[in-house]
Length: 242
Image (cartoon, rainbow, N blue to C red; front, side, top):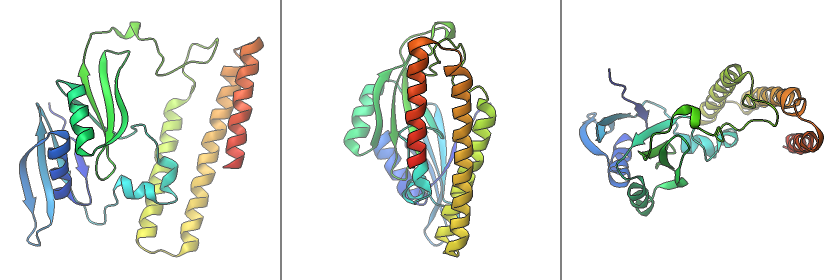
């Protein structure tokens, strides 16, 4: 069984050229319409492969994040992206940086045995390049990536699956708003949808506040409880000002 990522671009041809030049892919197939527009490209790297396409009216992540609604999702982290294993991640990083990739994080050893860097391509898609450096059993991972509250043995978010589903719905709403703006929809309709997104984001934030109180604060004591409470008050203050 083989899994092949299919990635959309506003200009699949230009994206393919960039990925070959910057990330070291090899182009194996390119299809263009009679108009000359490239609508399908296949690229390989090592034993892996990706397909690129240009759907009608597609808005790439870079342009989406430039919209007022999309700014809420402008983060240096990878939520949806592609993980690529390479032989020498430091050499790959040096070439990609020199060739013009937007670097989100420089190479760093991870507790699970990989050395990784994160980058963004010309249309805003996020990539993670990694080299396996050592075998580390999961039970030996420190858990720093998840981080836990003092005195509490589980990750911060106890209802993670539900929260992720809620955030996925919000992401879909934001993409819908971007399409409305691209289609020059009536401004009041756009504002109504933005209001709905803000309400949904606020609800997610309140759920996290409740989780912090019930576990991070309730399961700590003394100076730790005071520190966690101060953190919460500062976070709530930022939410109110936002």
